[in-house]
Amino acid sequence: MMSRNILLTLTAIGLSLMLTGCVTAPKAPEQGLSIWDTRQDKWVEESAMVSRLTDSDYIVVGEMQLSPQLNHEFLRLLQELNDKQWLQVVALDVLQPKLNSEESTYLEQLEKQAPHLISGYKPIIEWVEETDIPLVAAAIPRDRITSLKDPAAQEWLNHEVSGVLDPDRTHELKKILNVSHPSEEKKNPATGNYLMAAQQLQDYFMARMLMALKQKTILVTRAFHARKDLGVVPYVVKSQPGARVHSVLMISSMEDREQLISTMMKMDKHYDYIWIKKPVNSPLLAPGAQEAASENQ
Image (cartoon, rainbow, N blue to C red; front, side, top):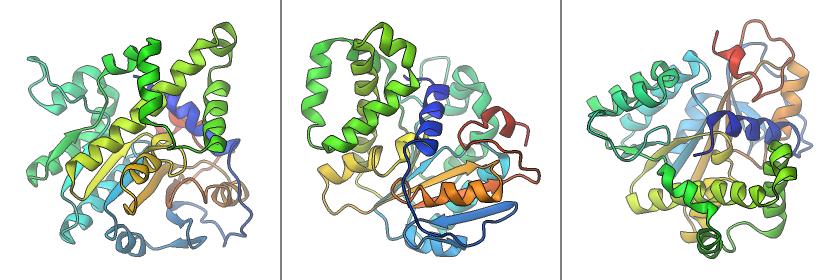
C-alpha cells in the first residue's frame, strides 16, 4: 500500500497547488477548533454539521489522527451520531481485513504494524467495540496493490473505473501523483501508471466496501481519499446514483489567519466540511506539511 507519508504529500499538494475558489470568508478563528461549511461558505457550529451528516448514507472522514484534541472530537462525533441512531458501522482504513495468528485483535495489529497510530486510534477502537457497533477493516490487502504492477491487472482496473472521473479530473489526479513522485516518474514512466492505478484501486475498493455494507457507515481514511472530487465519493456515486455522501477533513492547521482564510476559500470543491484545530502558537506552515510539528501538540 502507498505509504502514509506519500499520501500526506498528496494532501499537501492538493491543498496548496490544485485548489480553486473565490468566496470571501468571515473572520478566521485565532486558535481552537472551528468547522468550515463549504456549501454555505461560513464557519458553523458542530451541531449544524452533525444535523446535516445524519442525512447521509455514508460519511467519509479524512486524516483525523493529527492531534489528540481532534481525535477526542472525532470520538465525540461518533457518540453523537450513535445517540441520534445514525451510526451502524465504523470502517477504518488503518486496519487490515485479515488478522494473523499473532494478532488476535485490531489493537494488536496496530501495535505490530503501525505503533505510531495506537495513541490516536485506541480510544476509538475500544469505544466502537464496547458499543457493539460493527468495526470493519477498510485497508485494501497489500498484495492487491502490488498486483497492479501487472499490465493485465491495470487493464482490468481501467475497465472497472471507466467513467468515474471525467477527463479533467483524471488529468488533475495524474498531475498530482506525478508531482509527488517527480524522480520516479522521470526515471520510469511506467511508475506513473502504477501510482495512478494504486490510488484508484484504493478508492474503488473502499467505495465497493461501503456499498456492500448497505448500512449507514462512517469511513475514516487519509485526507486525499476523502476528497469528494477525486477520492472515494465519485466511485460511490457512479455505482449508486443518488447516494448521499458527505466528506469531512479533520486537520491541524498551523497557518496564520490570512493563510487560513485563503485555504478555506480554495477547498469548496474538495470537502463538505473542514474541521480545523489551530494551535495556540501558529507559525507559518502549509497545511499537510505539519505532520511532525503536530505530533508535539
